Image (cartoon, rainbow, N blue to C red; front, side, top):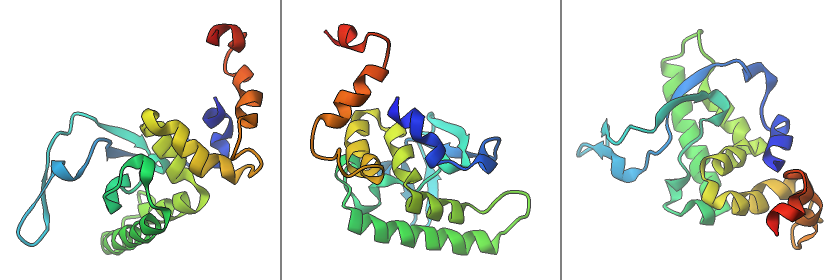
Length: 166
């Protein structure tokens, strides 16, 4: 409910109607085959591939070999920048005018927090942790260490939320 109410803070109106890109939503290191020179040769396990809005495309969370709920912000920030720079080099070599470049969208997504919003949406098991650590503090530091935020927002989840929970 809260993610839905703040989506407009993270997503730009100019991309509401596209473009969409093919996304490998379940990609992880064990699904990538490389040659002796570390060139990617094959991807396997593609059943979760889908077309997604461009702002939901981000570098994989496992770049620093940590779980989604324990990402070291300092380490990941460096790896995200390195990934984005490499992508920029490749995109600029193959630049076309029909689609927007992805690397500036990834950069802005990191700066504005769209990366975290998208990651929370993709990983429901750690949504609360991502929200508490990376999304909610951007709006208010006052609610970061207590139950006050949840006391105020919980009733808006559904009609008669207290009765539903009981």
